[in-house]
Length: 302
Image (cartoon, rainbow, N blue to C red; front, side, top):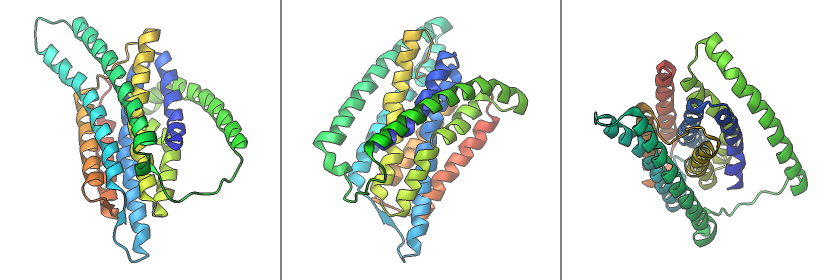
């Protein structure tokens, strides 16, 4: 949980700064891109490099606890539903000529605020499930010795967080220049480039753990990060936008919700069915992400 939380701190800081600057589209693209990156690239890399590593030992598959993975996947499915419903709701309202765009926006915002509260409650229940009633499912037998003291670790954490905040401020401010000079869309920057930067630490950690054949931990980091983003970070940004007067909502464009649905469906299937993974499954997940990234590259800003 701590690894996931601190890994998402960069994503949260960047999103909050962008939200205060009114970059709502960038914030939405960033959180969605982070989810796609985690469940396709990070999880796929764990399967791929972990699977290649065990081939040297004469093994074909890696094993993991499918029960814990199923619990996380089920929560991810709910989060996916919470993001799909506003898009479907918008399409239904727009199809009725008696409703104006402002009414639609108001209803979507109210739906997003209510859904965010529900997601917060589910996240609290999920933490209670993970840390209390079913904690045995999420514990690993292997413990690594501490390399540094906890006080030094805390100091480094605070220092890095402060540096990240200043870097994020500069990053968000420079996006307009990048869009103008390089011709990249904000959608592509938010959905692809920012998540790669924000998830770099989790990506490296997960792959390293997977190559040590600790797939339960690796999967918990990849899927757990996506779960926290959808159940905590995104609702937090919606509520924060409500407080500061920025119309941040859970409404994502239909194409984006389709990509999210495909990613969740594919990742859920791979982690729930057999409790085993191999390098080919990892390649499939990464290939899916590359296809989506290519589509987002040509996808216009709206």
